Amino acid sequence: MCIGGAHSSCGKTTLAENLLSRLKGRWGAIKYTKTAFYTTLVSDRETILQDGKDTARLLKAGAVDVAWIQSPIGELEEVLSMAMCNFSDVNGIIVEGNSPVQYLRSDLVVFVYGSDTARVKEHSSKVFEKASIVVTRNVYDPKAFIGKKVCIVKTKSVQYDDSNDEDWGECLDVIMDDISNKEIERRLCALCTDNTMSCAVARKVAVDLGVSYKLIWQKADGLGIKIVDSELGCF
Image 1: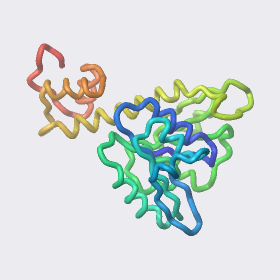
Image 2 (image 1 turned 120 degrees about the horizontal axis):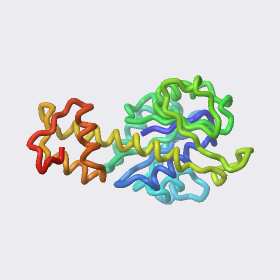
Image 3 (image 1 turned 30 degrees about the horizontal axis):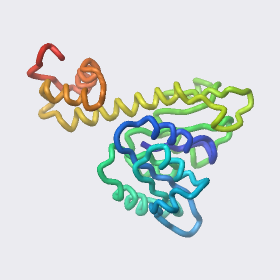
Image 4 (image 1 turned 90 degrees about the vertical axis):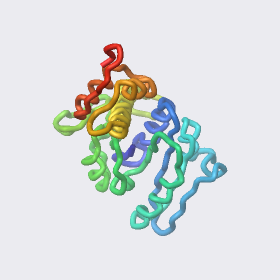
C-alpha cells in the first residue's frame, strides 16, 4: 500500500507506524525522500536505525525490513524497482511518499491531510486522485471528498500540536478493514479454479486470515466465485 500526503509533516509516517504496529504477518516499509541530484538506496540497519530518522520509527513499529530511497523523481522508478526486489517473503509493503504512487500498482492508496486541508502542495493532487481513503482531522467538507472513504483523526485540543495529541483509533480501524478485504480478495482469486473453490480451501483462507466463514462466502460471492463441496453447511 502507498501513503501520500498534502505536504511534509502531515502525518504520513505516524500513520505508517500505527499500521505496522497492528498488521499481522511480515510487512516491509519503504521511505522515499526527494533529492535534487544524487540517488541512494539505503537498507543497512546502522543507518536505518539512526536516532530521529523516520526509517527508525518504521522499523521499531514492526516492519521486518526498511529501505530508504533518496533520489530525484526522474530516477525513482528504477531505484524503486530495485528496492521492491529486496523484500522477500513479506505479506505486503507500506510505501511512504507521494512520488512512488505513480510507479506502483498499489492495492491501496491513502492520502493524509495535515491540520489545514487548504495546505496542499501542487504535486500532491495526483496522489489525492488515486487515493481511495482520505485521512483528515476532526472537520471536513463532504463535497470535497466525493468518491473517497474518509477517516477522521480526532485531536484532543482545538489547536493541532503533534501526533501525541491525536487519536487514530477509528481511522486505523477503517484502513485495516480495507487492507483485510484486499488480502481476502487476493487469496480467493489466487486459489480459485474456473471461478470455483472447495469448501476446505475456503475454510483454510478464513482460518489463516482470522475472519468468519460468512465473510469469506460474501467476498467469494461478490467476486463471482462459487464455493463447492460444502462441509457441515459452512457455506
